[in-house]
Length: 226
Image (cartoon, rainbow, N blue to C red; front, side):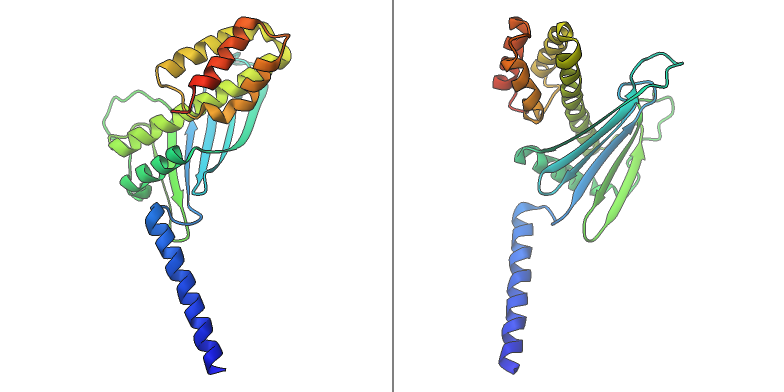
C-alpha cells in the first residue's frame, strides 16, 4: 500500500511539473481568456464583444439597429465562432500581460476627450478575474490591444454584411468588397481567414459579377490576416 501511495504521489507531481513547464513555455495560463467589449450607441454595431480563449477559440457577438432611423426599433444581431491564428492569439495575451491584466484603472482621465465608445477589457483564468473600462487609454499596450480588437471586429462585420448582400442584394457586393480591399491595404483589417467561408461562396457564385468575385479572390490570396 505504501509503495502504491508513493507511486501515486510521484505521478501527480510529474503531471504538475509537466503542466507548469507547458505554461512557462507558452506564456499563457491554461483556460485563460481575454475579452474586449465596446458599447457605442449610434454606431454600427452599437455593441460588440470578442472573447479570446487561450486555446485560440474566439466567440464574437454584436448587435445594433438595422436602420439609422431613430424611430426604428429593428435590431440586428450577429454571432460568430472561429479559431484565431496562433500569432495573433499570442500577441493578445502578451499585450494583456504588459497591461497588468487590467487589474488597475487603464482609463485616461484627461478632460475634453471625445467619446468614442465605452470599452472594457477583462481577463480571467484559474487565479484571477479582472476588468477595466475606458473611453481612451494612454497605456501603449492597451492602445495596441484596442486597435487590434477593433480591426478584428471590422473584419468580422465585413463578413456579416457580405453574407447578407450575397443572399439579398448581390449588386451591393462590389462596393463592400472594394472598401474591404482598401482597408486591408491600409492594414485596418486582420484575420481575414475568419471570414473565408463567405469569400469562398462569393468566388464560387456564378450569379455574382466577375469583378466582385475577383475582389473576393484577391482578399483570400492576400489577406493572410496580418
